[in-house]
Length: 608
Image (cartoon, rainbow, N blue to C red; front, side, top):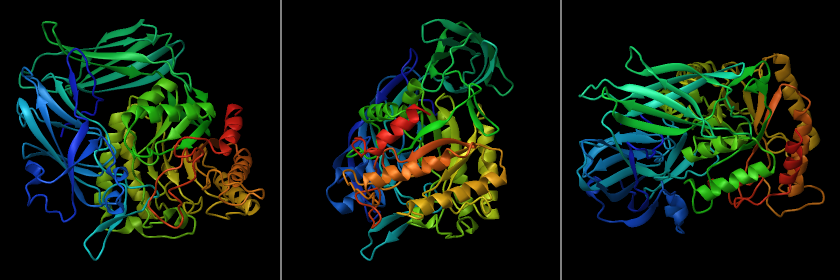
């Protein structure tokens, strides 16, 4: 495993080869793959697309809902690479992977929503190589997201998530083969300070070490969107062996909300003779983000968040990335006046952030810390006062270790995106015990140390995390509330729901946190095309009435600085009596057509 999570790009010094396509694939229900020598090659298989979510490929319900071990295999070619290093990079494998090349174990990774890279320079041959990946999608309480597995009498495993979205699995993002210089750029980070008509840019660069120990010079160039050179600086070598420079950009063109302006940053390494050793380029945006009192500030100006909780979810594609779907989603969000979304409940594919950078959308980037409540119907239990002693169990130490690792990987991957304005470190855990505070205080401390831009940190609190009982809200820079007054609480009784909602916000106000609040989830299941003159639940009329009630409450509290409705579009879930073909809380249908309430949001957000 190597630490570099840079997005794979072609430059004058770097080669990239996609391994996407149809791979051999087989389920391993009895976990006999090693007995059959699968790590050396699959003797029984069918073909499966990579990237892809295998569940949506099948008509057989047992295959769609398969839980356990499964295997992939493909052949790939390594060209003669002139003493360069070869890296194998997976965008994500859900939830854990063991990777073999020519029968040799070359690495493992835990966590299904973030990339990992393996140096295979000395483990693969020039020419044809066999790549085999053993994957497992079982849920437990030691890794993220959380859940359990039920074993049936016939030995079949069934996933029981502690979360309300489908447990899509597989090699769900692209696989790339990278050929890089022996000494290469492994990572960089940028942070900004704004002064009158100038931006102070702090740039850190990490380069890999090699036996040749060449004396390298690092340089950074910034070019604005009009092709003008904004900066060209040689970086200083630090005592830690990294490179750093703080430099000034005069009259910067700032990246702003729905008004994106990007610079191209090019980092280069040269040897003592001036020869180019490595080069890496991508787009960045100069902007600042901070919390001041009860306001969220972008470039020192307040912003009100308008948008969505989302999911990576689409028919047939499952959770795999598709540019056409992403383009359609952004067009839908722009159409109805949104400016932001939360990557509920896991980091999305990197391309989502790149498009947000281009569009000027704001992202709350969320680690997959969902399901930290021992309930397969947590969306109901969260409002009933149910307590499951989640953080009092012996497994919590291992869980915290994995949680910290995924926070580090998420921030390392996404730290340079101007669209990412905050990190969300949990969704709806139990936060009413001293143990929960002890657990999360370490998570937040680590995140604050890792992020070079020191973005605000938050986490979404469920109904049981009331102002009187929640131990963890003090860790948050802004407080995010998931509340379903009028659906799970006082469903069908909007007057009573409004009273309860106002009562809770009054209690938060009395607490005088001095922090901004945003609504990160609120909504109703709505069957598209279901109409009711009396506005009964599940109808499009009820969805409109529900949001009108909630907006009337939100607008009366000045510490409310955002609303991200649940959900952007209908999405797939596990089967259950609470769900009709998945979660129907979308403002848009799963195929991205608007429900009636989309026009209500459009009118509100275009004028707010």
